Length: 87
Ligand code: FES
Image (cartoon, rainbow, N blue to C red; front, side):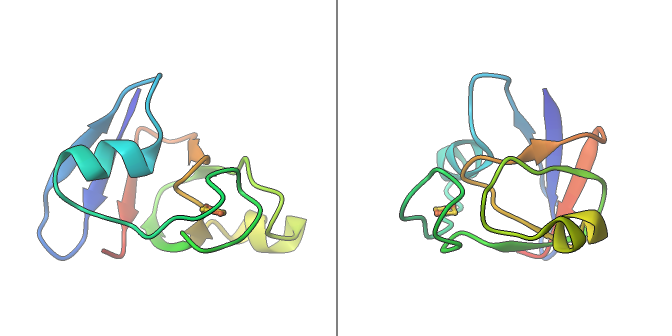
């Protein structure tokens, strides 16, 4: 499990191992628009302000992934304990 922090509110939300980031956010009333939920379409792309992403999408190039400044929360996760999201 890891945590995501909502930059605008400072809220910290736990993401359990069996939940996606978008599921964990939705349970707390924070909706991120999704479509494919498989890391293909890019609909859910969210900016990452801090932390290291565990990219599991097929959307970004390797160079884009290496920047850790955006990710697909429908399927991607975190390598660091915390990701700060620009939400
Ligand atoms: Fe398609 Fe996340 S919903 S990449």
